[in-house]
Amino acid sequence: MASVIVTLAKDGKDAMIHTKLKGLLAFALMSICLSACGENAVQTNKKNADATNASASKPVEACQDFKTIETQAIKGDAKSQYELAKLFEEGICVAPSRISATYWYGNAAKKDYADAKVRREAILSALEESAQKGDANAQYDLAWMYHHGYGLKFDYPKAIEWYERSAKQGQVQAQYMLGEIYSEDVRIEQDLAKAKHWFEAAAKQGNAKAQNKLSTMYYKGNGIGQDYDQARYWAEQSANQGNSQGQVLLGWLYEKGYGVEQDYAKARYWYEKSAMQGNQKAQDNLASIYYNGKGVPKDLKKAQYWSDKAMQQGDCGGREGCR
Image 1 (cartoon, one colour):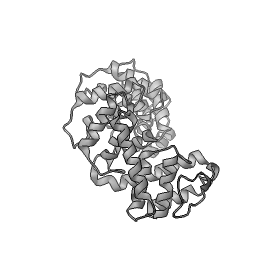
Image 2 (cartoon, helix red, strand yellow):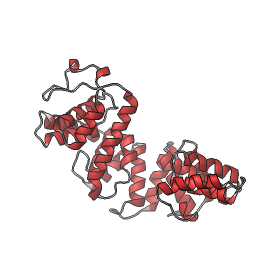
Image 3 (cartoon, one colour):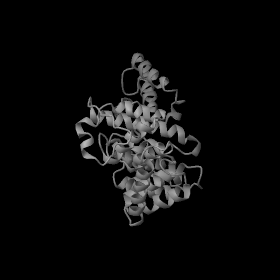
């Protein structure tokens, strides 16, 4: 579950957006559960129901009305917040998440709901104990919570400390997050050498986002010597895993002949892969391919179609600016 949350939270670079982030995360978590649960429904628990009572609800019933519980929790209903926390703590309907369980128990605790405070403190205590004993995943969870103020009070130095302890043990998500922090976070002095180090560590473990970030660094020569061969290599690794950013960069390299022989057919292929995932840059670049007839018969209808798709998301600027 942590990896999903990370994919959603990495753009939260300022403490001022924490409230917005929490809402977005909650809705994203709702979607994850619904996709896993289908049309199953969750039985509403009584206000003081004991979450440890296995007879309180059967697993198949536990997804009943989940969407309603999630929506009401976001709106501030303490009962729903408590119930949602239990689902995350017990891994019912969704994958277990100490981060989300702590967050929702915390919200319910602020309204003095049942034993929410006790349950929150128990999770945090166990989490910190595991982290101190060297559990890399616990260290990552703790870092993420400090980083985003989600379940714990925002503390940037502690976040970096725990990310580094986790990353040094090979935790791939922590490695990726450190790459993000050292390359893009305005709250710390930029260190592209460290960013490359951690992106590369995560990329070598197969993290598609890290592979794309590393490819982009080589393509642009950010903090390292520009190297189109390396840019192409890592873009391919990322693109072949379905990462839309890696796909659009690989398409761009083929279109321009950077590190590869210029090949409009391959450029179009990768743009289409990315564009079908909703990538705005790929949609705009694909429109250009069809408009100019690069490697394909000029097709103004297709050019207009993909241009409209890109414009619906906000024009990403000139063709060069799209990459």
